[in-house]
Length: 187
Image 1 (cartoon, rainbow, N blue to C red):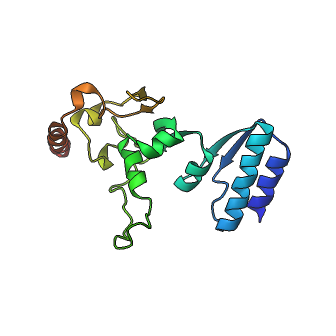
Image 2: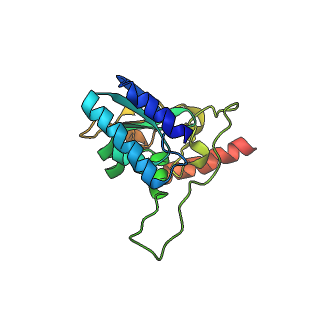
Image 3: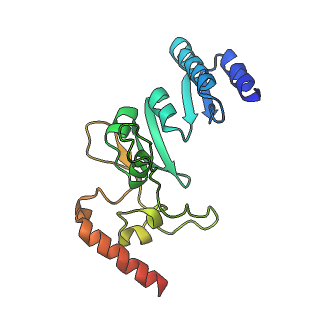
């Protein structure tokens, strides 16, 4: 109840910018739909910009125009919502998309998850923060921090990953490098 009151108070002010951090968490789907409808109405009628912070990809698909996917405190992919769902690029984003349940295949009801653990905020890795969980990690990822860079795409699309750089195209080489790097680190 308190959550709905706070959202109603924020919306009643007709702000130019609304920052909504998990506004629909722990709400039933009916109330969630009402809140999202109110936010859309505010956005459309009052020309309010909304920064929506959420882990719910359904809410992202319904509400967002532009999306920034974050992992361990960093933006790892940034693009428009259509490109994100049609053509995700960063391995973390791909993992998130694979974790969405699909009702089209009732025989496969298992939810996919991203293996491994999120790094400690007190002890971030020297290189890529997603390295330990990435199926495409390379030796370079262990030592260097990737920058958020635009990639070749018809839409504005940026990712923080070495995977799409021209010299890093050979997946087999990258996989072998990851195995070798892990052996060096553990010895």
